[in-house]
Length: 470
Image (tube, rainbow, N blue to C red; front, side):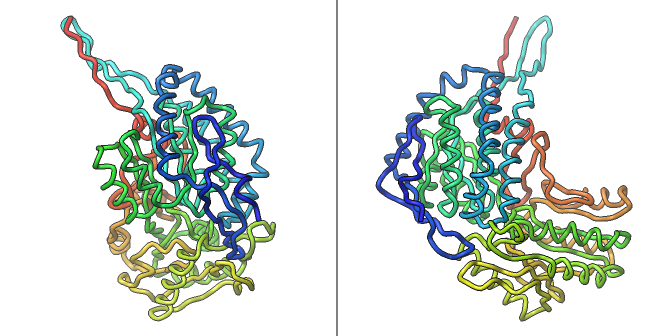
């Protein structure tokens, strides 16, 4: 077991190891494999004070100088990808190849966002008046990250905060704190003391952050239920918020597709990271003409999948990350078995790991839980439609609105259908693509605000109008 002294918090440029600790479970074994320090109110206060002290000098650096620091961080992050990816797999469960991709993507995104200019806009300049819109950093951003992609979903908001002149406090999920703490060691090398602080802790630490008067902005990625609590708490000090919450993404498959090709892509989009992705495909609506063939092809993909410890290079699907989520996925699967038909992949590995075999479910109705709720696991329904209008209506009949996709050889038709999905992002013949210069976020209860692009960056800034009478 890795002892807690191997990890430390980052506060004001210093490695800090309070007495309180968190136990971290390897989901492939179901057993504790490491401990790390846990922050409490005193450590949070110290981190906020450090960030506020560092803020004036950091904002004064300017965009170009801040971008240079971020590029150096990305370089160091990439250089340590091998070690970090193994640690990420141990605490999160995903195959180590996917962990490497997550770290590489974090580095790419961070640099990509620093290529986006944030410039003042002259609204009016005539003989009488000069009016300009400019942007100022907010101050201190609190970044609360989830357990499904702890690196990528920390680096996105962190880069947004730092590039725009803010200081930051990162709090990873108590289920997956270790890789973020290791990344804190890299951050310590690159950024001035106090600019970035990293605190591990339980859910109570997140609640303290959302209520803390010294934090100006909260970025939260997680469930809808917790997102509502975050927003309510932030209202006490009118903090700015960006919320990236759950999804129940629908994929609408029209009758003219190449079934085998689309099945491979849909299966990956539904089961990557064992389905634990906010924008994974959660529901598939297939036209009646290709429904049976698509189901057969999806089951074939499920039976090719190899479950196991993510450190094994042969593994394509790792475990569910934690026991609570494992039990929820099993509950939804059992409910689906009572109402529909299940076709499963290979048997789960022996042992106490949180494994769920990939499962294609047919015969469900819209009201069944696996259709109506976000499962966050590799068990997904395939539903039949005859009329595309019906498919659109069913896809939109949800409180979620993160993303969705349409699959067809007829691009014009597919784009027209995609435009009618009530989601933040609608893809055609793809799913899960995000880019540094493309805003991403949810409609309905799937979130507030956007990450990435100019829109995501200015969410960490306050617009200010300068109005001059000549």
